[in-house]
Image (cartoon, rainbow, N blue to C red):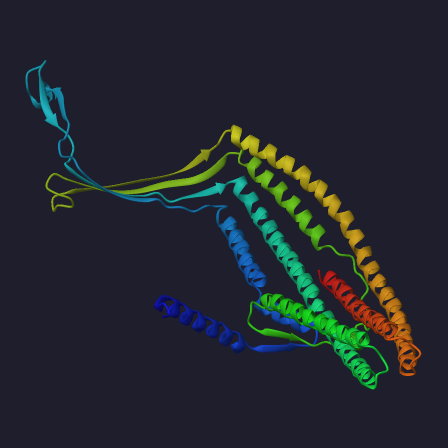
Length: 441
């Protein structure tokens, strides 16, 4: 008899799988025929852009805060209620009250109930460190925008790679499908000859193996396409199930862009150095004294009956003034400045390296495109020759001049050359869009 717990587990697993499958089918399918269409949806969906917008808002808030901190307005408010449960006794000369000289009288001073409201409006008149923070916040805004652009560039480059992986695989899929039809036709011919008793069983087996091998390649391609489409879907935050269908032959060789000088990485590096230099200034300016306006507005209520009694006494007093504050250098602050100066030297080295690297990358992008185009041209020439060889070998096989193994080898050579052409076209498109991304940033 089946265990009930096993039955329930199996049932819930079945329900779970049905739910997952239903969710997958429910996901909207969206067709794409160009990388630009994918980029548009990625920009609307991906968290890189959402987080970038948040970072920009935070940088703007930091700048506004820095402006407000220049005068740093503040107004501490305190409300105190004191019950002097036992007032202090004092002894004063009795002759003040008409008593004999040389004697003292015990007198209690003060009020038992004391309520005090104090307000102390203050603001800075001159604070060089706070003024320096404004420039620091502005540089931080520029650095944030630069980092956002770098993140966008990295994302677009990843999308570019994934997209053209799919395009390459799907175009290879078409080539394989065509060759499977050819292999099926060859197998049919081999079967007919075997029935006629012209060839051996081994030839039938080889034709069957050839067809199975091509079908396996097609199946593996389909799995790889699904994997790459899942990656592309993740770039779209799984809002759509992307279906890519781009014919490389039609547009890949059109409108080849010229490589412009890239500057986003170098700009980011210079902004990091600029930010650190300003941080050092902020710390150094903390050595200077600050001048502040200070004041106090106080209201006091005194009584021996209770707080705010009818016969209580009210006292108001206030003052205004200027205060100079000066924090002497500390070991920690001196160490922080020294540490940042060492960091600045490291950033200067990185800045020089990135400058040289950027120039090399500009040249590299142009060379990569030129290399891809030249390689595709060679692949195309080889594919034309391999196709011609296959057709001639097919004719010879039909005339019983060429053995089957030579024909199958010829077909596989043709297939590989055709796949190379497709991969070469995808590489050209990939290199082309790398230049487009590079020129935008």
